[in-house]
Image 1 (tube, rainbow, N blue to C red):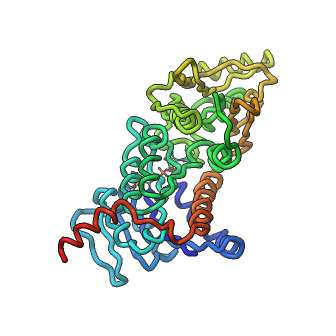
Image 2 (cartoon, helix red, strand yellow):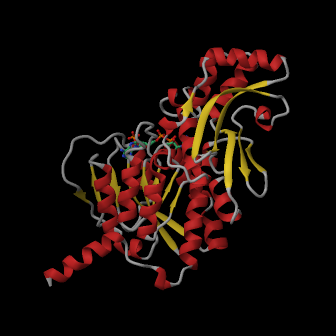
Image 3 (cartoon, rainbow, N blue to C red):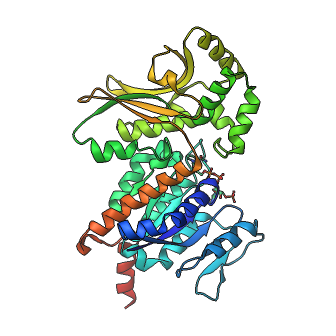
Length: 385
Ligand SMILES: NC(=O)c1ccc[n+]([C@@H]2O[C@H](COP(=O)([O-])OP(=O)(O)OC[C@H]3O[C@@H](n4cnc5c(N)ncnc54)[C@H](OP(=O)(O)O)[C@@H]3O)[C@@H](O)[C@H]2O)c1
C-alpha cells in the first residue's frame, strides 16, 4: 500500500527522514508492502509546495536549495496540478493539502510528518498543525515534544474522534522505544513513576567538562552536529528535559501537566565544576528528570543530582540517555540509549509511520470511517443539491 506524506518542517530531522526512506525503500516494499511518496512540504521561510502526484527527489532538493521564498500572494498553480505558494500560515496549507489529498485521507493513507521547531512556551504552532491535519483526515507523526508536553489529552481525543493515529516516539530518546514499549508490550500494568537522563546535550557537556573541555566548546559541538536545539538555552536551562518530563508524565502517568509545571533547574559552568569534583569521589552529577504520583497528583522535577557511582544513570557517558520506569508489576524497567543521532530521530518517525501502516493495512475496509472534516462537509453538499 502506498502512503502519502505531508512534511511540515524540513530541517535536520525531516531531511534525514526523507533520506532514510530512500535508503530503506526496497526493504519497506519487500518486507512490509509499504511504499511512500511526499506530496506536500511546508516550512516557515521556504514557502509551500504540493503535488498530489508526488514530489520527486529533485523537486525536494530544489525546494531545499532555492532558499527562502519572498513576497506574499495567492497559490501559484503548477503544470502538474499541484500548487506552490510563498510562506502563508502553515495551518492554511495543511487544510488545503489535506483537501487536495482527499482520496488518500479517506483511505487512511495520508500522514503528516510534523517536525517544526520546538516552542517551549505553548507547544505551538505544532499543536495547531496537528489539529488541522487530524481534522483533514491525516494521521500525524511528530518528533516535536511540544504538543505532547502541552496538549496530549486534547490531541489524543482529537485523534480518537478522527479515527486517526497521533504518534510521537521521537519526542523522547529519539528512536529508542519508550512510548511504543509501554503501549505495545506492557498491557494491564501501571507506570507509577520514572527517573532518567533525557537530554543529550547537557549530558554531553557534563561528560566533556569532566574530561577538561570548556563548557562553550562542548555546547558548540552539539550545535554543529544538529543535536542541540536551535536555541541552545532550551537544553542548558533544562527546558528540553522539562518538556520531555511533561510529555512522559502525560502519556505514561496520565498526568495533565505542562513544562512550566515541572520544577526546573538547568546546568551552568558551576554545575559542570561540581561534576568534576563528584567524579574524583567516585560519584557523578547528572541532569535528572523525574516524575511520579504523590497522593492524588503527579509531581515532576528536572535538576542536577549527585548520584552514586553504581547508579545506572551515573554510568551514562556523552550523549547517552536512559529512563528507569517504576511499575506496579515488574518493579523497575530501564531503557538505555547508548548513542544519539539524527538517524535515530529519523528512525522514530519511520517506526511510527510503520505502526500506522500496519494498523491501516490490517483494518477491514469498514473501519475506514469518514473524517470529521468529511462529516462536516456532507450536509452542506446535500443542501446545495
Ligand atoms: N535535532 C534532533 O536531534 C532532534 C531530536 C529529537 C527531536 N527533535 C525535534 O524535532 C523537531 C525538528 O528538529 P530539527 O532539528 O529538524 O529542527 P530544525 O532543523 O530547526 O528544523 C525545523 C523546521 O521547522 C520549520 N518551521 C518552523 N516553524 C514553522 C512553521 N510555523 N511552519 C512551517 N515550518 C516551520 C523550519 O522552517 P525554516 O527553516 O524555514 O525556519 C525548519 O524547516 C524539533 O521539534 C525538535 O525538538 C530534534
